[in-house]
Image (tube, rainbow, N blue to C red; front, side):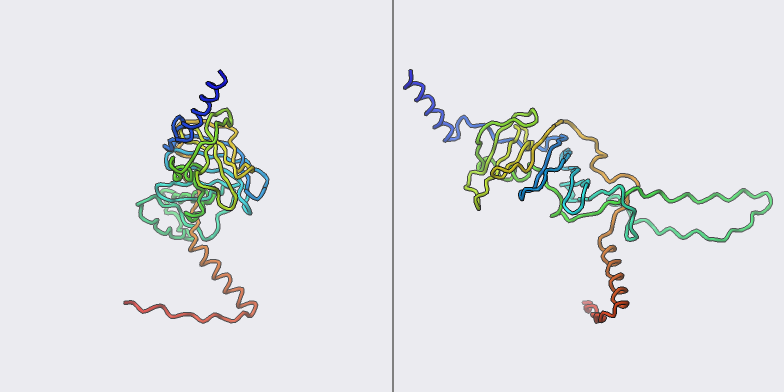
Length: 270
């Protein structure tokens, strides 16, 4: 009996080593969900609460960013458009209204005259111009490289041929398998992830440090408004903001006596 048991264990180990009987690699099919958990930096920073919404290529992240504080980021992989939403900041001077894709640029609104013409007897009272819509926040466009990537992206790119299962796992009441790259870790850093069969990353470890761990998960379609820029928000134009900063620096240089930089002639047209 003992020999039969040892033979069965050895056979199971052999099948697992050949990839037979091992769990299938997750199907990363852009499952719609809302997941909440804690994130921590690899250098040992304090964990912070993070909420992630996904629905197809669209994602929303509510987290605490280094040197920024609480932030909400909306990102669309299909258009590579990413914005940081700030509902409390006053709109700066270098902002432009948000334009819908394909819509013409809004025309400049002429200033209302300060003088009024006396009403003629029997004439209707002048109608007051509608007030400009209140600005309730700003949306800052960020570079695609700075946009947060879905947790699944790296593991989907790794693929089943380059990943191996290192056991079962359970996080936030969800079952999954721990996966790790087949190749030896570089610089002694080994990263593993607990992933559900439908491709939701529940936990990420780097050696013994937990970088991400879910505390709750709800699958299902998400409200489309979560991934859009709210009404009343204005889009910060980075180029206009940079120009404004440059003009302010030139004014500051003239006050402090800094040498004036020579202006370069524009390149010839050709």
